[in-house]
Image (cartoon, rainbow, N blue to C red; front, side, top):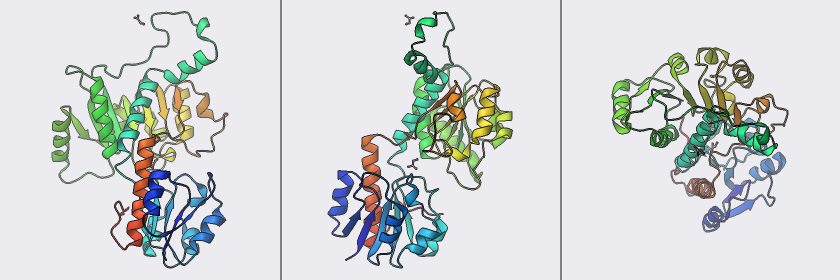
Length: 345
Ligand code: GLV
Ligand code: GLV
Protein backbone atom coordinates (compact mmCIF):
# COMPACT_ATOMS: atom_id res chain seq x y z
CA UNK A 1 0.00 0.00 0.00
CA UNK A 2 1.55 3.37 -1.03
CA UNK A 3 2.14 5.78 1.80
CA UNK A 4 2.19 9.55 2.02
CA UNK A 5 4.46 11.14 4.58
CA UNK A 6 3.17 14.35 6.20
CA UNK A 7 5.76 16.31 8.15
CA UNK A 8 3.21 18.52 9.89
CA UNK A 9 -0.53 18.14 10.53
CA UNK A 10 -2.12 20.11 7.68
CA UNK A 11 -5.38 21.09 9.37
CA UNK A 12 -8.62 19.12 9.24
CA UNK A 13 -9.71 20.15 5.75
CA UNK A 14 -6.59 18.84 4.04
CA UNK A 15 -6.17 15.87 6.37
CA UNK A 16 -9.67 14.72 5.41
CA UNK A 17 -8.68 14.87 1.75
CA UNK A 18 -5.61 12.77 2.52
CA UNK A 19 -7.58 10.30 4.65
CA UNK A 20 -10.12 9.83 1.86
CA UNK A 21 -7.37 9.10 -0.66
CA UNK A 22 -7.17 5.52 0.51
CA UNK A 23 -3.40 5.73 0.92
CA UNK A 24 -1.71 5.07 4.18
CA UNK A 25 -0.52 8.17 6.00
CA UNK A 26 2.49 8.71 8.21
CA UNK A 27 1.82 11.97 10.04
CA UNK A 28 4.19 13.75 12.37
CA UNK A 29 2.32 13.35 15.70
CA UNK A 30 3.76 16.50 17.25
CA UNK A 31 2.51 20.06 16.79
CA UNK A 32 6.13 21.02 16.13
CA UNK A 33 8.71 20.48 13.44
CA UNK A 34 9.94 16.88 13.40
CA UNK A 35 13.61 16.05 13.70
CA UNK A 36 15.63 15.67 10.53
CA UNK A 37 16.12 12.00 11.46
CA UNK A 38 12.36 11.46 11.64
CA UNK A 39 11.95 12.83 8.11
CA UNK A 40 14.89 10.91 6.65
CA UNK A 41 13.98 7.62 8.33
CA UNK A 42 10.38 7.77 7.18
CA UNK A 43 11.42 8.70 3.65
CA UNK A 44 13.52 5.57 3.47
CA UNK A 45 10.36 3.46 3.91
CA UNK A 46 10.00 1.89 0.42
CA UNK A 47 6.25 2.44 0.44
CA UNK A 48 6.46 6.20 0.90
CA UNK A 49 5.72 7.63 -2.55
CA UNK A 50 5.02 11.25 -1.67
CA UNK A 51 5.80 13.68 1.10
CA UNK A 52 3.91 16.82 2.14
CA UNK A 53 6.44 19.17 3.67
CA UNK A 54 6.91 22.73 4.85
CA UNK A 55 8.92 25.67 3.58
CA UNK A 56 9.93 26.89 6.99
CA UNK A 57 10.93 23.73 8.84
CA UNK A 58 14.70 23.12 8.72
CA UNK A 59 13.95 19.39 8.97
CA UNK A 60 12.25 19.53 5.57
CA UNK A 61 14.97 21.00 3.38
CA UNK A 62 15.04 19.00 0.15
CA UNK A 63 18.73 18.69 -0.62
CA UNK A 64 20.98 15.88 -1.79
CA UNK A 65 21.04 14.40 1.71
CA UNK A 66 17.27 14.08 1.84
CA UNK A 67 17.02 12.79 -1.71
CA UNK A 68 19.73 10.22 -1.02
CA UNK A 69 17.90 9.07 2.08
CA UNK A 70 14.62 8.70 0.20
CA UNK A 71 13.62 5.34 -1.23
CA UNK A 72 13.60 4.82 -5.00
CA UNK A 73 9.81 4.85 -5.15
CA UNK A 74 9.45 8.46 -4.05
CA UNK A 75 7.53 10.30 -6.76
CA UNK A 76 6.79 13.69 -5.29
CA UNK A 77 7.76 16.29 -2.75
CA UNK A 78 4.79 18.54 -2.24
CA UNK A 79 5.52 21.76 -0.42
CA UNK A 80 3.02 23.76 1.59
CA UNK A 81 4.22 27.03 0.01
CA UNK A 82 4.44 28.69 -3.33
CA UNK A 83 8.16 29.37 -2.88
CA UNK A 84 10.56 26.48 -3.42
CA UNK A 85 13.92 27.94 -2.49
CA UNK A 86 14.21 25.15 0.14
CA UNK A 87 14.06 22.51 -2.58
CA UNK A 88 16.76 21.44 -5.01
CA UNK A 89 14.29 21.02 -7.85
CA UNK A 90 16.91 19.96 -10.39
CA UNK A 91 18.24 17.21 -8.17
CA UNK A 92 14.72 16.02 -7.37
CA UNK A 93 13.67 15.95 -11.01
CA UNK A 94 16.88 14.14 -11.96
CA UNK A 95 15.72 11.31 -9.69
CA UNK A 96 12.24 11.32 -11.20
CA UNK A 97 10.77 13.13 -8.19
CA UNK A 98 8.23 15.83 -9.06
CA UNK A 99 7.95 18.99 -7.00
CA UNK A 100 4.48 20.29 -6.17
CA UNK A 101 3.73 23.74 -4.72
CA UNK A 102 0.78 26.03 -3.99
CA UNK A 103 0.62 28.97 -6.41
CA UNK A 104 -2.52 31.03 -6.95
CA UNK A 105 -4.44 30.31 -3.77
CA UNK A 106 -2.36 32.75 -1.71
CA UNK A 107 -2.16 35.67 -4.12
CA UNK A 108 -4.88 37.72 -2.44
CA UNK A 109 -3.59 37.10 1.07
CA UNK A 110 -0.05 38.12 0.20
CA UNK A 111 -1.30 41.13 -1.76
CA UNK A 112 -3.32 42.23 1.30
CA UNK A 113 -0.26 42.05 3.52
CA UNK A 114 1.80 43.92 0.92
CA UNK A 115 -0.64 46.80 0.85
CA UNK A 116 -0.78 46.78 4.64
CA UNK A 117 3.01 47.08 4.80
CA UNK A 118 3.08 49.83 2.20
CA UNK A 119 0.58 51.83 4.25
CA UNK A 120 2.21 51.01 7.58
CA UNK A 121 5.56 52.16 6.27
CA UNK A 122 4.34 55.29 4.50
CA UNK A 123 2.23 56.32 7.51
CA UNK A 124 4.78 55.30 10.16
CA UNK A 125 2.44 52.88 11.92
CA UNK A 126 5.16 50.64 13.36
CA UNK A 127 6.98 53.33 15.28
CA UNK A 128 3.66 54.93 16.26
CA UNK A 129 2.32 51.74 17.83
CA UNK A 130 5.53 51.43 19.79
CA UNK A 131 5.22 54.99 20.97
CA UNK A 132 1.70 54.42 22.29
CA UNK A 133 2.57 51.08 23.89
CA UNK A 134 5.55 52.49 25.67
CA UNK A 135 3.46 55.26 27.24
CA UNK A 136 5.18 58.07 25.33
CA UNK A 137 2.07 59.51 23.72
CA UNK A 138 1.57 62.09 26.49
CA UNK A 139 5.08 63.42 25.88
CA UNK A 140 4.28 64.00 22.26
CA UNK A 141 2.35 67.24 22.10
CA UNK A 142 0.30 67.52 18.97
CA UNK A 143 1.76 69.63 16.19
CA UNK A 144 0.65 69.97 12.60
CA UNK A 145 3.27 67.62 11.27
CA UNK A 146 3.95 65.35 14.20
CA UNK A 147 4.09 61.66 13.22
CA UNK A 148 3.39 62.54 9.62
CA UNK A 149 4.19 60.21 6.80
CA UNK A 150 3.47 60.15 3.10
CA UNK A 151 0.25 59.65 1.21
CA UNK A 152 -0.30 56.61 -0.98
CA UNK A 153 -2.44 58.80 -3.20
CA UNK A 154 -0.04 61.66 -3.80
CA UNK A 155 0.15 62.81 -7.40
CA UNK A 156 2.89 61.46 -9.64
CA UNK A 157 3.66 58.49 -7.43
CA UNK A 158 5.67 55.76 -9.09
CA UNK A 159 5.18 52.25 -7.77
CA UNK A 160 7.92 49.83 -8.72
CA UNK A 161 7.88 46.06 -8.60
CA UNK A 162 10.78 43.71 -8.61
CA UNK A 163 8.99 40.71 -10.10
CA UNK A 164 5.63 41.16 -11.77
CA UNK A 165 3.72 37.91 -11.42
CA UNK A 166 0.25 37.17 -10.11
CA UNK A 167 0.83 38.59 -6.64
CA UNK A 168 2.25 41.87 -7.90
CA UNK A 169 -0.73 42.23 -10.20
CA UNK A 170 -3.10 41.64 -7.27
CA UNK A 171 -1.21 44.38 -5.41
CA UNK A 172 -1.75 46.80 -8.30
CA UNK A 173 -5.50 46.04 -8.24
CA UNK A 174 -5.56 47.03 -4.58
CA UNK A 175 -3.30 50.07 -4.71
CA UNK A 176 -5.28 51.69 -7.49
CA UNK A 177 -8.24 51.86 -5.14
CA UNK A 178 -6.32 54.41 -3.08
CA UNK A 179 -5.94 56.81 -5.93
CA UNK A 180 -8.45 58.80 -7.92
CA UNK A 181 -8.72 59.65 -11.58
CA UNK A 182 -6.53 62.73 -11.32
CA UNK A 183 -3.88 61.11 -9.13
CA UNK A 184 -2.96 57.98 -11.02
CA UNK A 185 0.29 56.35 -10.06
CA UNK A 186 2.66 55.04 -12.68
CA UNK A 187 3.65 51.39 -12.48
CA UNK A 188 7.11 50.20 -13.45
CA UNK A 189 8.53 46.76 -12.95
CA UNK A 190 11.51 44.60 -13.62
CA UNK A 191 11.14 40.94 -14.39
CA UNK A 192 13.94 38.53 -15.11
CA UNK A 193 13.86 38.81 -18.87
CA UNK A 194 12.58 41.13 -21.51
CA UNK A 195 10.16 39.33 -23.80
CA UNK A 196 10.08 39.76 -27.56
CA UNK A 197 6.58 41.19 -27.37
CA UNK A 198 7.28 43.28 -24.26
CA UNK A 199 5.64 46.43 -25.64
CA UNK A 200 2.47 44.51 -26.35
CA UNK A 201 2.47 42.97 -22.87
CA UNK A 202 2.89 46.39 -21.27
CA UNK A 203 0.19 47.90 -23.45
CA UNK A 204 -2.17 45.16 -22.26
CA UNK A 205 -1.31 45.85 -18.63
CA UNK A 206 -1.75 49.58 -19.14
CA UNK A 207 -5.15 49.02 -20.69
CA UNK A 208 -6.22 46.67 -17.93
CA UNK A 209 -5.25 49.07 -15.16
CA UNK A 210 -5.92 52.39 -16.84
CA UNK A 211 -2.46 53.65 -15.85
CA UNK A 212 0.93 53.50 -17.49
CA UNK A 213 2.63 50.14 -16.85
CA UNK A 214 6.11 49.51 -18.19
CA UNK A 215 8.96 47.06 -17.81
CA UNK A 216 12.23 48.86 -17.06
CA UNK A 217 15.78 47.79 -16.31
CA UNK A 218 16.83 47.46 -12.69
CA UNK A 219 18.71 50.76 -12.50
CA UNK A 220 15.68 52.67 -13.66
CA UNK A 221 13.46 50.75 -11.27
CA UNK A 222 15.71 51.76 -8.39
CA UNK A 223 15.96 55.38 -9.48
CA UNK A 224 12.31 56.08 -10.20
CA UNK A 225 10.28 54.10 -7.65
CA UNK A 226 8.69 55.95 -4.74
CA UNK A 227 7.37 52.65 -3.43
CA UNK A 228 9.49 49.67 -4.36
CA UNK A 229 7.90 46.28 -3.78
CA UNK A 230 9.98 43.10 -3.88
CA UNK A 231 7.92 40.18 -5.14
CA UNK A 232 10.27 37.96 -7.13
CA UNK A 233 11.56 34.43 -6.56
CA UNK A 234 14.71 33.84 -4.58
CA UNK A 235 17.31 32.11 -6.73
CA UNK A 236 21.04 32.58 -7.31
CA UNK A 237 20.38 35.49 -9.68
CA UNK A 238 18.17 37.40 -7.22
CA UNK A 239 20.16 36.85 -4.02
CA UNK A 240 21.38 40.26 -2.74
CA UNK A 241 19.85 41.87 -5.80
CA UNK A 242 18.84 44.84 -3.66
CA UNK A 243 22.21 45.86 -2.27
CA UNK A 244 24.32 48.93 -1.58
CA UNK A 245 24.58 49.81 -5.26
CA UNK A 246 20.83 49.46 -5.72
CA UNK A 247 20.06 51.59 -2.63
CA UNK A 248 22.55 54.16 -3.88
CA UNK A 249 20.33 54.74 -6.89
CA UNK A 250 17.06 55.04 -4.94
CA UNK A 251 15.30 58.26 -3.98
CA UNK A 252 15.79 59.43 -0.41
CA UNK A 253 12.02 59.68 -0.10
CA UNK A 254 11.42 56.10 -1.31
CA UNK A 255 10.30 53.09 0.69
CA UNK A 256 11.14 49.44 0.15
CA UNK A 257 8.68 46.65 0.92
CA UNK A 258 9.88 43.03 0.84
CA UNK A 259 7.23 40.33 0.88
CA UNK A 260 9.21 37.74 -1.09
CA UNK A 261 12.30 36.27 0.57
CA UNK A 262 14.76 37.91 2.95
CA UNK A 263 18.00 37.22 1.06
CA UNK A 264 16.87 39.13 -2.05
CA UNK A 265 17.61 42.26 0.00
CA UNK A 266 21.01 42.55 1.66
CA UNK A 267 20.18 43.20 5.34
CA UNK A 268 23.36 45.11 6.20
CA UNK A 269 23.02 47.34 3.17
CA UNK A 270 19.36 47.96 3.99
CA UNK A 271 20.34 48.91 7.54
CA UNK A 272 22.90 51.38 6.19
CA UNK A 273 20.45 52.79 3.65
CA UNK A 274 17.86 53.42 6.37
CA UNK A 275 20.18 54.83 8.99
CA UNK A 276 22.01 57.14 6.60
CA UNK A 277 18.81 58.44 5.07
CA UNK A 278 19.50 56.93 1.69
CA UNK A 279 15.90 55.70 1.67
CA UNK A 280 12.99 56.79 3.84
CA UNK A 281 11.56 53.56 5.21
CA UNK A 282 11.10 49.83 4.84
CA UNK A 283 8.38 47.27 5.46
CA UNK A 284 9.50 43.67 5.74
CA UNK A 285 7.46 40.50 5.92
CA UNK A 286 10.62 38.45 5.49
CA UNK A 287 14.13 38.72 6.81
CA UNK A 288 17.33 36.80 6.09
CA UNK A 289 17.84 34.25 8.85
CA UNK A 290 14.17 34.05 9.84
CA UNK A 291 12.73 32.78 12.08
CA UNK A 292 15.86 33.07 14.16
CA UNK A 293 15.55 36.83 14.55
CA UNK A 294 16.43 38.10 18.02
CA UNK A 295 15.30 41.33 19.65
CA UNK A 296 18.75 42.82 19.13
CA UNK A 297 18.65 42.43 15.34
CA UNK A 298 19.90 45.76 13.97
CA UNK A 299 16.91 46.26 11.68
CA UNK A 300 14.52 46.02 14.63
CA UNK A 301 16.18 49.07 16.15
CA UNK A 302 15.56 51.22 13.13
CA UNK A 303 12.52 53.41 13.63
CA UNK A 304 11.34 53.62 10.06
CA UNK A 305 11.49 49.87 9.52
CA UNK A 306 8.37 47.79 10.06
CA UNK A 307 9.05 44.08 10.51
CA UNK A 308 6.37 41.40 10.69
CA UNK A 309 7.02 37.65 10.95
CA UNK A 310 6.23 36.28 7.47
CA UNK A 311 2.47 36.75 7.64
CA UNK A 312 1.95 36.92 3.86
CA UNK A 313 -0.27 33.90 3.43
CA UNK A 314 -1.28 33.61 7.08
CA UNK A 315 -5.05 33.77 7.06
CA UNK A 316 -7.08 30.68 7.94
CA UNK A 317 -8.87 30.43 4.64
CA UNK A 318 -5.70 30.75 2.57
CA UNK A 319 -3.72 28.31 4.67
CA UNK A 320 -6.53 25.74 4.34
CA UNK A 321 -6.47 26.18 0.55
CA UNK A 322 -2.69 25.82 0.49
CA UNK A 323 -2.87 22.71 2.67
CA UNK A 324 -5.49 21.15 0.43
CA UNK A 325 -3.49 21.87 -2.71
CA UNK A 326 -0.40 20.45 -1.03
CA UNK A 327 -2.36 17.28 -0.18
CA UNK A 328 -3.89 16.98 -3.67
CA UNK A 329 -0.50 17.34 -5.36
CA UNK A 330 0.80 14.43 -3.29
CA UNK A 331 -2.24 12.26 -4.01
CA UNK A 332 -2.09 13.02 -7.74
CA UNK A 333 1.54 11.96 -7.85
CA UNK A 334 0.88 8.65 -6.12
CA UNK A 335 -2.02 8.03 -8.49
CA UNK A 336 0.35 8.61 -11.40
CA UNK A 337 -1.58 11.75 -12.47
CA UNK A 338 -0.30 15.20 -13.37
CA UNK A 339 0.18 17.37 -10.31
CA UNK A 340 -2.32 20.20 -9.87
CA UNK A 341 0.62 22.59 -9.59
CA UNK A 342 4.08 21.37 -10.43
CA UNK A 343 7.26 23.41 -10.27
CA UNK A 344 8.67 23.35 -13.77
CA UNK A 345 12.09 24.94 -14.19
C1 GLV B 1 5.29 31.88 1.36
O1 GLV B 1 6.23 32.58 1.58
C2 GLV B 1 5.24 30.82 0.41
O2 GLV B 1 6.21 30.57 -0.30
O3 GLV B 1 4.19 30.16 0.33
C1 GLV C 1 -8.70 64.30 12.93
O1 GLV C 1 -8.89 63.51 13.82
C2 GLV C 1 -9.46 65.49 12.74
O2 GLV C 1 -10.45 65.71 13.48
O3 GLV C 1 -9.11 66.26 11.83
